[in-house]
Length: 105
Image 1 (spheres, rainbow, N blue to C red):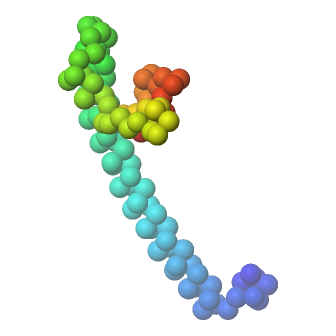
Image 2 (cartoon, rainbow, N blue to C red):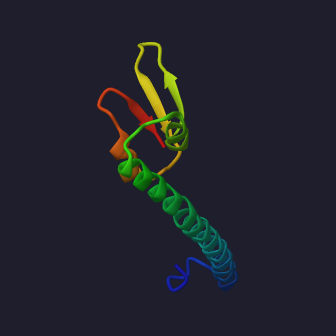
């Protein structure tokens, strides 16, 4: 648009500056999200895997393990359960998903 004369030099510079600011903001947000993701992977995933290993070694679903894996269970009006797991990885959630229950992560 600048080459075609549709934008003045001043408008062009304003657009460039605005784009630089938006890019810097997005890069900061990306770094923050990456830090959060890395932190969650390192802590929660290791803890969850240890708990799953413990469960696999002795497959006894007791109250303690249930509370570690499931945040809450809601029963809808039609009687079907909706299970809210304590982790957000869809692959891991699929391990516990049953055909009759809805799940949320």
